[in-house]
Image (cartoon, rainbow, N blue to C red; front, top):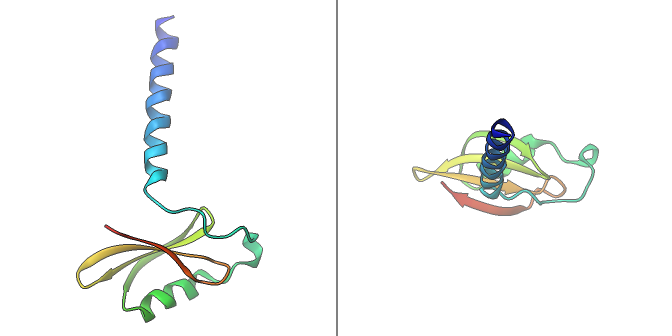
Length: 92
C-alpha cells in the first residue's frame, strides 16, 4: 500500500507541475487544421518587422510562438498560423 501511495503522490505532483507549465503560455490561436497553416517563417518575419530580434520560434498548441528581444527585453509572441495576427504577448 505504501508503494501505491508514493506513486499516487508522485503522479499528482507531476500533473500539477505540467499544468503550471501550460498555464504560462497562450495556446489557442486558431481552429484551422495544421495542413492549412501559413509557414512559421512568416510569423518570424512579422516579429522582425515589428522590431524584434527573433531568437527562436515553434508551434505550440494552435499558435506560433516567437521568442524575440526588443529594447533589451525578452518577449514571447503568439501568432495565429491562420492569418498571422498577433494574439498575445508575454514579457519575460
